[in-house]
Each structure stands twice: as C-alpha cells, then as structure tokens.
Amino acid sequence: MSLNIEVAPFAASRNSGTPRRIGQRYNAEKFLPEAGNTVVCHLDFNAPAHKAVLEARKRMMALPEAGRFLFTPAESLHMTVFEGVTETRRTPDTWPRDLDRDASVDSVTEAMINRLADFSAPSSFAVRVSGCGPTGLALKGATDEDEVKMLA
Image (tube, rainbow, N blue to C red; front, side):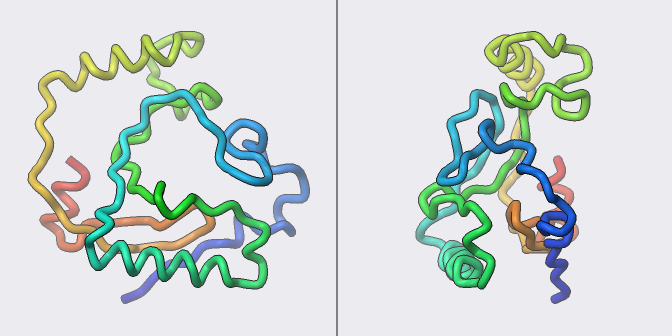
C-alpha cells in the first residue's frame, strides 16, 4: 500500500508566523469549543481499526517534533463525514454560497436540515487510509464500491 505522508506544508520553515487559527480552533494546550454543524462519526472503540489508529497516534506522539503539534484526545477521534459551517470560518469556500455569511450558525443549520430532509444514508461502507498529515488521516473507500457509497 502506498501512503502519502504530507507534512511539508505545515513545516515551520514554510510558516514563520503564528498559526492562522490559534485562538479560534485551538490554543497552545487544547482544541477550543467552536459553534457549527459538522457531521462526524466517532470510531468504534471495539473495532480492530480503532486499536490501529490509537497505535499510530501513539507513534506520532513519540516523534521528535511531536511537541509542536496538538493531538485530538483519544476519546474524541472521529471521521468527518460532512464538513458543515463553523462560526469562526466564514469564507467563500467554507460557507454555503446562497446563504449570507452574516447568518447565524443556527439559521444555517436549519437550512441544511431542510435540504437534507429527503436524504437517505447509503448502506455501510469500509474505508482505507490514503494519506497522513498533521491534520489527520485521509480516507478513501476500501473498494471502488465503498468509494461510491462514501462519496454519496
């Protein structure tokens, strides 16, 4: 399996200033609460894959430069299924084009719930890790069929 491990864009040599979301998304010690409506799926603590993710996390935390990163608490590990809006990110690429960027998160959530009223989730699917970086693991469907279900 070929795994893309991308860390160069996050290197201090390329980012001499303060991280752009410090004080919004996180501070030096922890992730901060952030109003929004992203849909996540927490890991199944009883699945073998959970043990593998915890082991990978442990190994990353043991790397020489690990102190420069903030790690998601083990009990909060999750897969982002749908990235909705967040209060602190109101940019054209992160906010629904047809909704005012001054709209409250609650009103955007209501609009999204209305849009998803007829949505039916696909049947279960399996994933595989396709990349790894400081912001998390990148996933793809384990098979072509799983990829189609996941993207649906």
